[in-house]
Length: 215
Ligand code: AMP
Image (cartoon, rainbow, N blue to C red):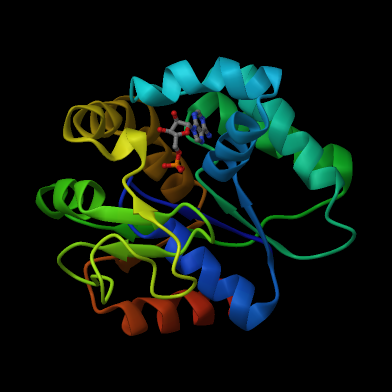
């Protein structure tokens, strides 16, 4: 069942998406990853998005919606998990139009609920391997050798938008623009909340069950 993972930056959307990809064979549609790939390839969208991302701001709706529309066209029938989209009410409404136009349906909206006070530490301590993308954390899941990826031996780095001043801005943008979607999906009877501060395997089991059942 197609699904949407929703929650603040640092809630674990990427981590749980990876579990759904691994266990249920779903396609992972992460708008953040799409922008980071576009930045690496130096495309027009990448250059446009980078300034917003480095400021902790949201990329304009029309750019994001265009990217998601293209991604939905390239699924070849695979079920998908949306990660980091929609982030505004306008994006949520646009998504409904896109799904209808493309004859696709959407299952549960999984809300990863994490208290504010642990988000900052999760984000600023996160490190990403610049070669294979594996994610570690300086306190909760450090690499065996500092700065060296356990998976491939590549260098681990901090995402430029995981610096404290940008993280604070991202959390402001989340509260202002994205949090209202929680009520939107709650009223629509689509929201299923999961305790995103629980142990990783507990969260993964719950998310997998919700997505497999479709509710
Ligand atoms: P993420 O990897 O999901 O944390 O996204 C990183 C950054 O990409 C965000 O802070 C935004 O600047 C941008 N971004 C990702 N998805 C969206 C979206 N749906 N709408 C606007 N900006 C986005």
